Length: 179
View 1 (tube, rainbow, N blue to C red):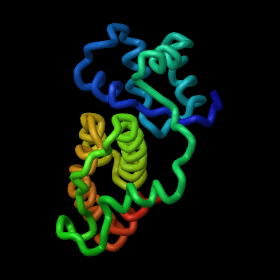
View 2: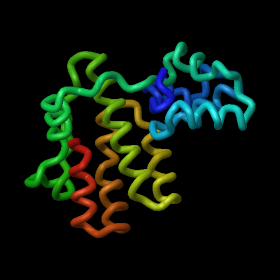
View 3: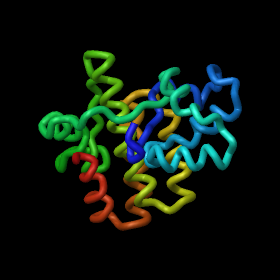
View 4: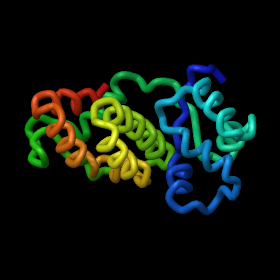
């Protein structure tokens, strides 16, 4: 695996963080906690050494289906259509956001939509909010199991962005979720 690969928690990994039912090994739980969709493999491995985690912890978590690496990038049209499903100029729920109640028909499509949206929202929050506010919202992101649950957080995320940056910049930041 490429050292620049950024790993993320799968829906099963998200569930494990909330329920703590699968992993009994504290070092493996700690490594799962470190995987946040922002750190690359090289960074994770150096952090794993610092906490004395097993050298194959990443492989173990991947084998259990708790973490994954991103797949090939989506075609531009597919990425745009999934983002357009929840960001519009003329919608009622805070002015620029609309939640799309439709779910993906296939479970694989739902998992791909969830992980893509999870990474984009997590990056938006961590990159544009203060540490404490971002941490609080990221805890809520970690509890989400579906793309619809992630979308339900958008009004709160928008409010936090507006408080920090003002409405015009908040709207611009939210529109970047399309890309």
